[in-house]
Length: 569
Image (tube, rainbow, N blue to C red; front, side, top):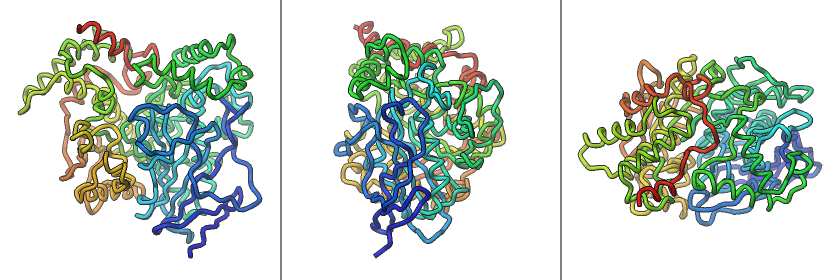
């Protein structure tokens, strides 16, 4: 029987061995962020004396889950403020230096858990890597931001969820060698909000959390670090896989307004650490739910990273365009029909007119701070409608909206990120996942999140397979995706035997790997779409991802679907 007791800096751990993989689940990496530890920089976990049994997942962050987007049927629902745990899967404890793949889950910074069936790291680890997943604070508890909540020790007043992720990466840096992992070869991979987190970390000033005095100091200078550093001065990670998410960071003013709304909902007259740290978890979540439902009809991200002048000294897009993270190899990508998952929950879209599509697109542009004189919504709709008309089949207004939403929210930001990174000397690769979900007779298409079970190799799970499918073609595609991700983790290049050569994504040659039953490399995939948006969005990194645009709030839409429905009647 395999010995499943190991020793790390904090003490001894006992996991379990199953089907060729050692599982260590629910390892505390930081003290519980409760009481006065709320809205504070995470503190490393304290050592323990006895052997700590780590054979089950810890709870996810305190949250309210709702709808099909937040979880799959049967997913563990346990959540709590005491949530700062990591899970580690490794195929060997023999002192090998295997690549480490550190996963950050998505969920709009509101929901999600490392215990979800889809994220089980055993199958991926079995192929020769150490897989780590980490829970982090979500919603108001992780991303509400206000200067009057500032941590007395570090000065941090927002981005607490990002700080948790950094603390977990620091734990990996200090302890992963005991699990057979290579501290000098860590790849961060994340999906959706997890991807946004990972990309934001490329430009983060982590030294604020790890300096000797642990005091955050406002900096007005450009951070030229080429990778985020851990407490020992070594890069926390050297590779990054961004699945369906680019940079995201609210302005200070927008974040403060959300915090003030929270205070109003909670009956707190003055925002102080004492007032908020004394509130019940249920009250915080109830107030959070009211705010969430009022923004983007519950599909938005009111609680998100903030450009606080400390951990994120400038907008992450500006940091990256200036060379921050240029030593990090990146693999970025999206799914062909990302927006369909979100459109599924919006009634009335089947009767949408082209004028209605234009109104919704205008709402997105306005929320992003783009004036009508710069880019009119009608111009966007006309471009997509003309492009669709050149195809073989007619396209409904609903499908046009889904295509525009997919490009606007996912494809275009990720592509622009990759090109900007390449221009600073960084290495970038890009993919698109086109394999459609069989769920609801294929109505979802290749929607948001569909690539996840293919990455983790969880397509055989009886619940997950309803979403992913479980045919031989599905398994073959999963093997190819895993081979690419693992090859990238080993050497910074996703080219592999099953897929062949896959060139870097750069201005001189925009090569994209298209994953489907017949995966292939495509040159200049949808280049006309990217060129259209690039023409109107300007230079990436000029005060954010869109040159000259300043969002006025955290909302993605200036007006909601309800306003559209009322106007269409």
